[in-house]
Image (cartoon, rainbow, N blue to C red; front, side, top):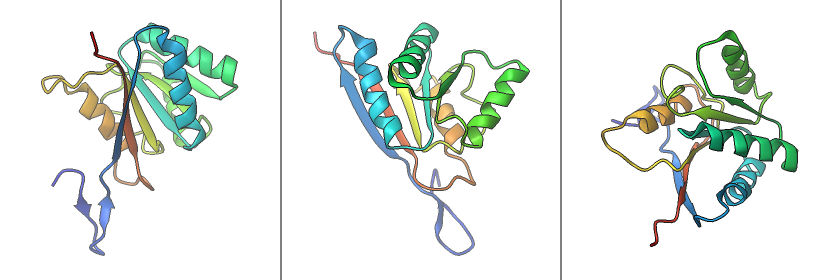
Length: 158
């Protein structure tokens, strides 16, 4: 049945997410990724940005906050009380952008307030289930509206 679950009224309770992909050139990656993120954030109410690369997440977070004056938070580890408080603030809509380490937050968290879920440099690997699990954190019962799921990846041209 996948993402299409039918509620009692016969309407789809969860709709299929809108998927998109953006590629950037290998040189000067952070500004290119940040430009795309700002575009996404400006048209959404709540955005989650996932990556395994914690230093890249930190650089993107800093540029979004300092250069673009967008309120955002970042969590790189998932095992302390401040993490829970930050996730609750995101769910209440107090933080419009949340940067998360993919491996720390791919399971066990409800992030249904997000309307955009962005993966940075995450290649599809059918054996690795962190990406599908992370998508499911935002695509949960109780969510309202459409979810956009996107990937921002490096160009693969040689």
